[in-house]
Image (cartoon, rainbow, N blue to C red; front, side, top):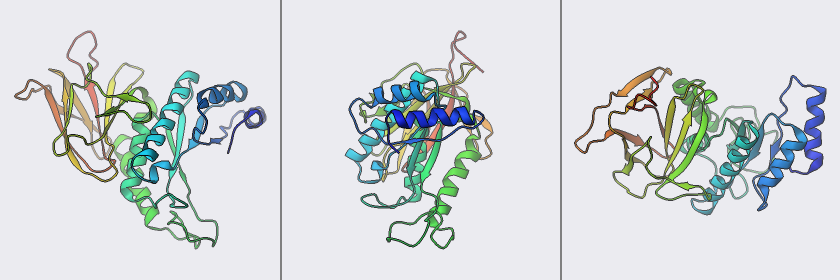
Length: 295
């Protein structure tokens, strides 16, 4: 891990030797105030096909660690958009040092918040424990080459995601990332737009919600809601403009009509979302106006 010209030169040489391969180089999280400039220089020197990095601060305590986590997602997302390459987030699967052992909810939270923030792929630190050593957390595969509870948790979270969405997010481009009720990581505080009119957590009005907006090559619009709390469950009401049609996704990746544009008593098209810590809801949103609708 690390940076500098030598790091970029290694990747450039690797691409020259084996242009058919996609070497994976993992950066540190943003540890300097001008990290965006460092990434720009790295991309210019390396001609890399991908930006990747790791960040584990989100598995400390809610608050500063989570804010730093989102600062990194924002910085790498913006760099990936500037240079037209995907970015991958290496998240935590093994408790160590000051980082707690991730639960199934924590693994789901890391996956869904990464996707909603525009990440195109995930890597986990790490997969197996290479040998007997310090008593750390529970690796997915332990030092005896046996699968653990962490393995089952990761398998369930990732299988559920892929069974539901398939390759959908490989075909989408992140267009907006915002936070309700207040921004994190120097990001954007959510405000109503032509896609989503309102957000209301029923039991805790200050429940943090992450909203990711996407589009595909045909101009179809998508929105992803993620419960940004690592500990709380809530029922969240999402409001959409009049006549909006909402399409959601079933367990086998099949899209279905979740709301045909029927309004509620307040004049909105709505969807109620039961969201546990890190849980998500994804909709394809079809606008009513003829000029912008895509069916």
